[in-house]
Image (cartoon, rainbow, N blue to C red; front, side, top):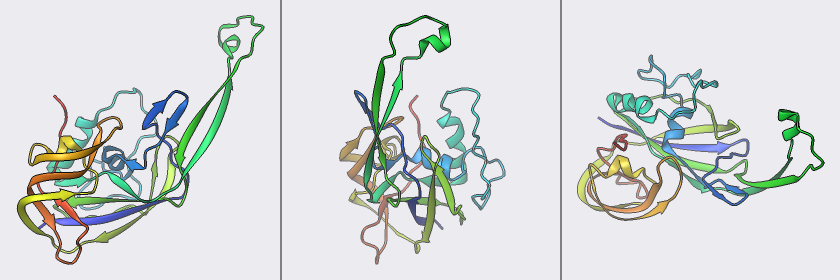
Length: 235
């Protein structure tokens, strides 16, 4: 038996992360990476995780080193049979914030200077009340936190969850419009065509045409997801 949950996130704060940097513009793409969602939902570093996602999840606000450990953190989810897809925008608006700073080297190095040169940058963020959707595929029944935090500013977001009926499976050529992590699907499916969404740490793909086994629902025509999807990493 497989459990598939349709989850939506409504932003209560603006969310920012640098999907791309164009000169002094730092842009937030309206897609949330599945790695980020795993951390936000409290699935990472939770040794006691069994059949619930705890309200008080174990996200660490202090990291002694700035080195990603995605493989170490996410591989245990494969063993538990839990997979989270990236989240795409259902409806969103963007806001543009301008920030300014000055050259304050004299504060650090005690250097004398006659110049105080101002500079600036712009951050394109996703506005509050924007809504995103993602799916969780699990071999166990799950519970989810009501509130999570996302992005550089740890922005607050509300999570609503719909448990979908048991899916049917079929092996054939199909199209998945929902964004996917290519590393997680290419080992179990023949990917034919796709659109790329460039973003770190792994660019995503959407509108993917592939051949393989997939989940579908008789009465929910807009949900088609690959079977045998799991976290994989570059060697």
